[in-house]
Every structure is written in structure tokens, then in C-alpha cells.
Image 1 (cartoon, rainbow, N blue to C red):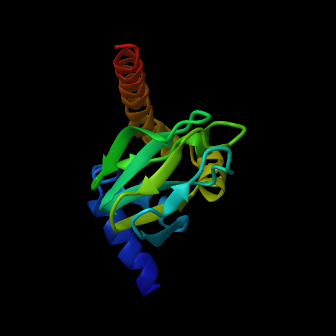
Image 2 (image 1 turned 90 degrees about the vertical axis):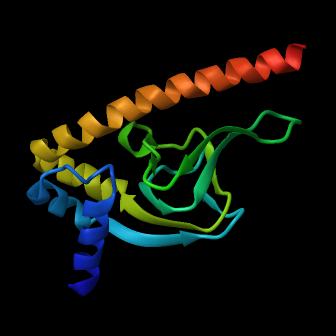
Length: 157
């Protein structure tokens, strides 16, 4: 029980969940675990099963895309207080990017299958999560688009 209480406190302190009602947030705790990643270690890889999302508590994660015959391109860096991973929300639940720790990363992982089950049973939880995820998704897609335009413009000149 102590571990769950500790995770509940960490969840409540993270900006993504901070202003969520505690009764709804408490439902999520049962899907959470602590995680640690060393520099260079992957949180997930493109094409893999998207079964978690991550609350970054410390450190930084590079979101990368690969093109044949070229080194990976960092399209975004995700840092402390941010989240990474929404592919667990969208069938077929497959990662479309790589996520690699650029330094020591401490995170809370949230099991997507566990959470999807809870979303079906508790629509208020679903509403509160989607209210938080959708603006982040929109912003990150726009940022990735701008980064791709920037990279292709640099490559032309």
C-alpha cells in the first residue's frame, strides 16, 4: 500500500494530473509504476506495441524519426513535467516515433491497457484525460510539422 500511496503523491505533483480531481486521479494510480532510464536507453521504438505513456519527472527524452540511410532526426525534446506517448490511445496501438533518454530519466509509466479498461468504466476519467491529452497532441503535431519543414528547408539550401 505504501508504494501506491507514493505513486499517488507523485501523480498528484505532476503538472499533467495536478489539477485533476483526486477521486478520478486515484483511479489511475493502480495503472502506474516508477521507471528509470539511462542515457541512450529507449523508452519505446517505432513499430513497437504502444502500451504505456510516461510522465517525465526528471531528465529529458528525445523524440526521433528515422529515414533510410540517414541518422535519426530529433523532432522534439520532452523534459521534466511533461508527458510522452499517446499512441496507447489510438488503435492499432503502435509507436510512430522512437523515444530515447538523453540523460538520466525518472518517469512514471502508466499502463495503457489498464487505463483503457478504466476509461470504459469511468467516463469522467476519460473526459478529464482527453481534455489534457488533446491540446498536447495538437501542439506536438504542429511542432513536429514545423520541425520537418525546418529540416527539409535546411536540406535544400
